[in-house]
Amino acid sequence: MSGAMRYAVGSILALMLVSCGTVTRTEQDRFTITIADSTTTEQMRNQPGDRPNGIIYPSSSTVTKERWLRQYDSIETREYPAFVRLALFESVGLMGSSLDGSSLGYGLFGVYTPVSTLLFGEDPAAGDDLFKGGISRFGIGEWKLHWFTDDPDWTWGITAYETIRPDNNSSHLLMGAGVLSIRKRFYLRSRIPYVAITPQLHLAAFPSQYVNAGASADVGSIGGVNMRLYAGYAMGRSLEGVFVNFPYAGVGVSLLDFLNREEELDTEWKFHEHSAWNIGVIEAMLVGATDVSASIFARRGAAAGSTPALTGLLFRLFNTSLAIPLWDHRLSVGTSLATFVALGQQEFAIGILPLRVGYVWQPTTSRFTIEPFVEVGYAPSTFFQLAAKASLPVSDQLSLMITAGYISGETLDTDVIRRRGPIMLDNPTAFRGFYLGIGASIFDRLFSRDELRYGKGYPHE
Image 1: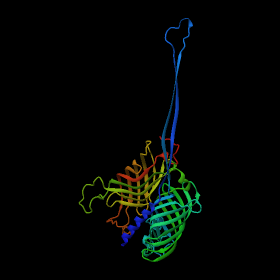
Image 2: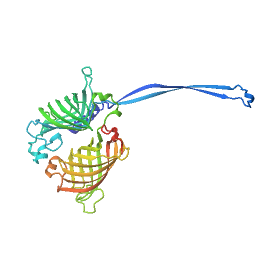
Image 3: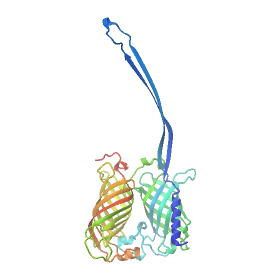
Image 4: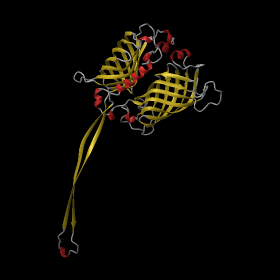
C-alpha cells in the first residue's frame, strides 16, 4: 500500500472511530394528559300574562348539566450534550524535544513563526529557536469514562489525526490516526473560563506505533478557545521505522474546542451559557480593492488593462469573536487560526492567530450584526486592518456578509516563502488600499446578546 493510500485509509478509519461517540443525548417523557370539566346551566322561565292584585304565579326552572372528558398523548423531548470535549484543531509548540538540535521553526503554539523571528527578527533557519518541535491534532472527541465507580472527570477519547515532530528530522516523525486517549481532569476553577490540571495518556497503533504520556495545565473553553501548558514524554517507532523517545514541554492553543464539565452533561442544551458573539469554521469573501497591481483572477503576464471590480479575496479559517463585558457588554476580542488577505497579485498578507478587537451592534432583535473592528497580523506577515462588517444569518450554519475597510501591510519575505510554501512572489513589497468585500461564513453561528452569559437581563436599544 502506498504512503498516500495508507494515510487516506487511516484518516477514514479515524473519522469512523470519532463518529462512534455521540454528540447529543436525547431523553423523552411519554404521558397522557387528561382534561375533565363540567358545566351547569340554570334557566328561569316566568309564566306569561298579567299579575293583578299581587297574585304570584309559579315559575319553572330548568337545570342543565354537561360533563366532558378529553385525553391525548404527549411527548416531551429534552436534549443534553453527550460529550465532554469536541475539538477541531489543536497545535502545540515543543521545547526540549529536539534529538539532533534541528528546529522545525514552528515557534510559539506550533503555528509557523519562531519566537526569535517574531520578537528579534532573527533568521528562522538558524535553528536556535526556543521551540524546536510541534504537535498538531485534528478531530478530537472525548466522552465520559465510567472508571472507579463513576469517579468524576475521567474521559476516553479519539483523535482522528495527530503528528508529533520533536525536530526537523523527518525520520523522527510520529504520526497517528485514531489515537486513543485517557484523561483525568482536576478542576481548579469550576466556572468559565475553566482551569484544570489534566494527566493524560495517548496510544497510537497506525501508521506509527507510540505512547505519549504527560500532563497539561488548561485554561479556556471560552468561545471554543483554549490555552495549554504541556509536559510529557513520547516514545515509539516513527514512520521510517526509527525508534525515538524524548521528553518535552510545550505551549498550545486550540480553536473550535468545546468542553463540558460533568455536571453540564445533565444540563439541557438550551440552558448552556455562551461566551462568544460569533464562531465559524470558514469565512470567505470576494473583494474589490484600490491601488493593486493586478487582479488575482487575471493571468500573470497578461496585458495591462483596466482593473476589474473583483481584484482579490479574504479568507479566515476557524474564526471566533469572544464577548467581553465592557462598553455596554458589546466589546469583542477575536482571532482565527489563519487569515489570508489578497487585495491583488502582489498585495497580500497571511496572519496566523491575528488579534482582532471590535464593537458589536445588533440594531434589531434578530442576530443581524454590524461590527466595526481593528485587526492586526504579526506573523508570518505583518498587516493592519480597519474595517466594518455586516453579517446576516441565513441559518444556524450560514451567514451572508459585506465588509468595507482599509488594510496596510507587508508581504512575506521571498526566502521565507521558499522555505515554507509553494507561493512565489516576483517583487514582495509593502501595500495598502481600500476594499469592499461580499461573501459568506460557512458552519457559522451568530449569537444575540440575550444568549450571552454577560448580556442576560440587559434590554435591547
